[in-house]
Amino acid sequence: MKKTLKDIDVKNKKVLIRVDYNVPLDANLRITNDKRILATLPTIEYLLESNAAIILISHLGRPKGKVVKEMSLKPVSERLSKLLGKTVKFIGGDCISSESKKAAADLNPGEILLLENLRFHSEEEGKNTSGEKDKAVMDIFAKQLASMGEVFVQDAFGTVHRSHASTAGIVKYVKDVAAGFLVEKELKFLGGALENPASPFVAILGGAKVSDKINVVENLLNKVDSIIVGGAMAYTFLKSQGVSAGTSLVEDDKLDLAAELLKKAKERKVDFLLPVDHIITDKVDFANKRVPEGAVVKTTVDEAIPEEFMGVDVGPKAVEKFSEIIKNARTIVWNGPLGIFEINEFSKGTVKIAELVAESTDNGAVSVVGGGDSVAAIKKAGVDKRISHISTGGGASLEFLEGKELPGITALPDLK
Image 1 (cartoon, rainbow, N blue to C red):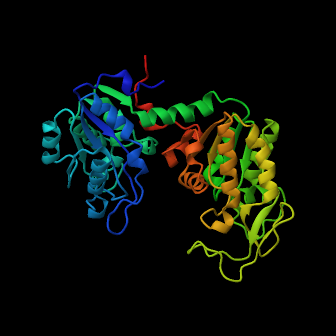
Image 2: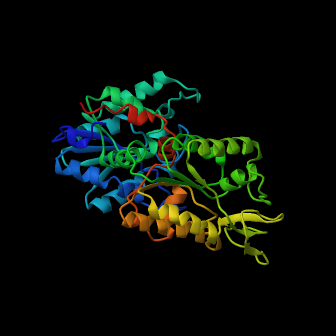
Image 3: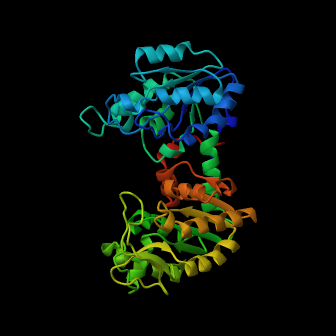
């Protein structure tokens, strides 16, 4: 168990918080979704109540070690000021400039400062100015960041799978270190699901590629009672069993692997459920996310998809089959949509699964949903408030499900 915010003394201290403010901006540099900012408010408000001076550090986008005006964190300071009803100071240009360091040094208890985009420095990602990996420059950068605070709080779950200066490097240069409330919650739900799940434990996996989820499936086969697979990755599994997939997206180079995973599931007595019918079409306008005029959309009678047609959603029989498993589940982990849910006509299967997961949660199951598309799907279904935990870290939650060590978490001290 990792040391968390309430395990350390932050009263009147200068606290550095690594947050994930990598928010989407429109052409006018206005924030279009502030959920990542909102997710950090409990930690910030707790520190304000403790009269701490707060220094926030984050990245935004991929500026690749250069100052990119459009990737400045200034809009974030403005939005955070509104959300808190309190001024959030901002120093632009360079997060470790003499001006930034002076602002941090002059910060009084109860005040908040947001520093500029960490990734304007290539050293944040462990690279020198030539773009080569260089641990020494990363350590120097981490030390400069650390010099601005007395306490370091890791509250950016979306970045803890990266071994960067502000995630893993900074920890060794600050005396008091802990997980913030957001990271603590992620570890509680994701860790609980994998380490001590109530049975039956059901994993729902979707998305386009088997290759993206190989390690997740491998790891979960040792833990779950059932795996439900939908989305395009299901067609690779079906084709590996000799079922026709038509023109559906299939990873032909992963057919042997898919067959091997199905064999392992059988050996381990894990119920591996694939769609028994599909919504199919002969045309999709992926660029404009719509069904083109004249397209034929129909439902298959079984798991086979005819030639000239592609699978775009799970069918009603598949949903019915999956529903019995989901309704009886006590632990549910979901990563990836079960169809092209961005197109309304092909979102029904995913939306219905989201409703079933919410219903199961209402009846006492613990549900954890991770990955941007899965989160968008539960919001589209209007059930996001009925899910036990929505993970804020797409890549991090996926690697957690794979059983990988997350450098930003490993670096945090254990509670003694």
